[in-house]
Amino acid sequence: MKKICVVGTGYVGLVTAAGLADFGNSVIGVDIDESKIDILKKGGIPIYEPGLIEVVQRNVQAGRLSFTTDIDTAIKKSKVIFSAVGTPPGEGGEADLRAVWTVAASFAKNLNEYKVFINKSTVPVGTGKKTKALIEKYCPQGSSYDVVSNPEFLREGSAVGDFLNPDRVVVGSRSKRAQDIMKDVYHALIIRGVPYVETNIESAEVIKYASNAFLAVKITFINEIANLCDIVGADVNEVAKAMGMDGRISPKFLHAGPGYGGSCFPKDTMALVEIFKEHGVQTRLVEAAIEANELQKQGVVAKLKSVMPDLKNKTIAILGLAFKPNTDDTRFSPSKVVIPLLHAEGARVQVFDPVASDDFRRDFPDLDYKKNVYDAIEGANALILMTEWNEFRSLDLKRVKSLLRSPVFIDTRNIYDPRDMKEKGFTFVCTGRSKCFE
Ligand code: NAD
Image 1 (cartoon, rainbow, N blue to C red):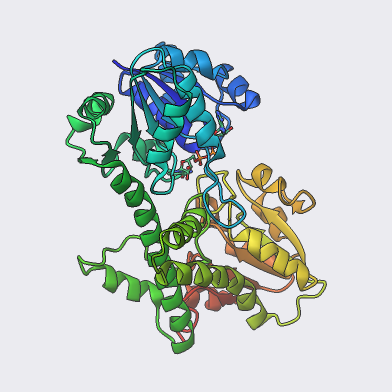
Image 2: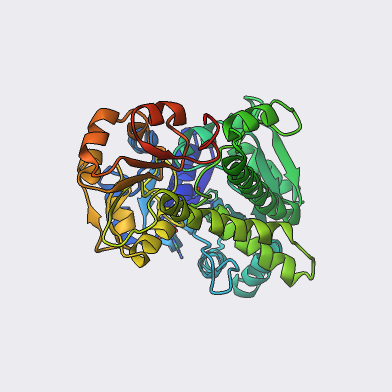
């Protein structure tokens, strides 16, 4: 059993803290946000993540998991310190590492015995070296420690399962002492046969950005193919299915839609472009994906205008504010691009999301937030389905049609069948399948 401190109790930190406690470790979760720690101390969780509250409560009750805002004491008491703080985009798109440096400085100050500092946040290559230099500057003379990179690959919405059953664990460090400790921390996974990738810090840092950028490019690629399918009468679902049967391609991340969003792909692709620039290496591909993805988001409004050219004084229902289902996270959500464009066209917007309205409200306080999906649709001239929440997959289409002023249905996620929708009398536009049954 290792004594662990996880700094940052957001989507990654809280799942990491709870997951590591579930592996039998003794874990203290730390955050500077007192309101989050208050909620956690009272037995709740500050985010929406399916299955997480059960793991948190189970481990709190077993005495393996606790929460505090007192980072100094938490570090002093722990052998292994995970930093899982946010690394949001800075003004130029580069990763803002201020929170990481703050945690590293606290680590240095509280080095009362050998400890391991682990960067779990997504950080640019070279951060491990800079972290070491910073710790060296602030730690008591003669302190003994190691710095490790252990990037996280979980997905919001299925974070608990991803953490407890990952495809791989990547640990960057050439220190045998640190690697032995990390193998102990992840023992529960290693004995189950989860691949443990031992590498150096720089490789681990690159692996994370390369993985996210690759997936962002893959999504963007199928989105562009979908745009072509829309014009030529092909069906992107059938195209993607047949493509995915090729083992070299794989069927995952080939779902056409309104463009990727979320707290990772947009910021990590932007940061990767800055990393390439910093090191004088050319990247056309990642830059092109960022640009194409932005156009894809804007293209949702173009889809609507293709069947409703004048949006002035029209009411548009937006179904879905989260960047994907099963999360309340709306960072870089496609709805954040679509709604201002609708406003710019003179349209009114009424919105519904099963859990993400509060998060969305921070950036869009004045929208007409409805209490349920049918309230959002009622009286609208058109609806745009933006997020594939389960409850949007089985709408009562008769009721939808009767509530809409005109039966215009834009399905950015390809949930509904174009032939069926046309038979039901909808003016229906989807993504890469709009003309395939004509
Ligand atoms: P988040 O914003 O949800 O959580 C970050 C937390 O850190 C917040 O609770 C914040 O209050 C806390 N914090 C900030 N500064 C602090 C400090 N000095 N001391 C203590 N706490 C502090 O972010 P997240 O989505 O959990 O992402 C964290 C990191 O993990 C990022 O680098 C992100 O790129 C990476 N990541 C995220 C995901 C994901 O799906 N969200 C997946 C893999 C990797």
